[in-house]
Amino acid sequence: MRFCSSRNPKDFSVRENGTLPAARYYPMKSLRLALLEIFEETGLIVENTEQIGLLHFYKNSQRENPDWIVHAFLACQSIGVPIDGREGRLKRFKIDALPFDEMWQDDQYWCRLALEGTRLEGWFYFSGDFENQIDHMIEVKPPPNPIEV
Image 1 (cartoon, rainbow, N blue to C red):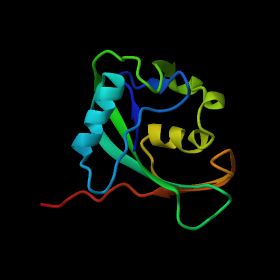
Image 2 (cartoon, helix red, strand yellow):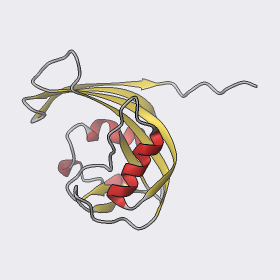
Image 3 (cartoon, rainbow, N blue to C red):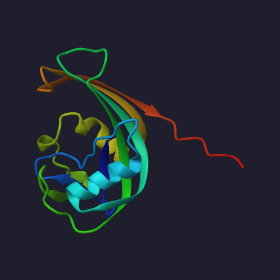
Image 4 (cartoon, one colour):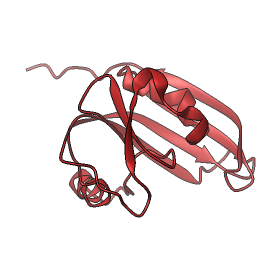
């Protein structure tokens, strides 16, 4: 799971090492426990979360059976003061100045769409053990249907 969090809609939080705040998310693990992990790693309580994407990651140039499936969420609000964690320090960036050259290679293809509120599914293919991205595909998804009462 990746959370893109921001208090200001023009700012974006990324760790100094270029990674996004993330929590391991398994089908048997609730979103609540994933949010708790985000808090423990960053000191931030993220609110108003919305699942924005599903990302499939493949290594060793394979194209079947992804090594990772990531549920990407957009958090429209965060409360608290960021703390340094074992994975680095959070740093705020203007959305139009994200440090893509310091982030995972796939982020440049899906982050902007996610930050615009576009729902998506993406497939990212890497050589070796996620060493270099060799291909990708992104499919824009329609917004969820409103529930009629």
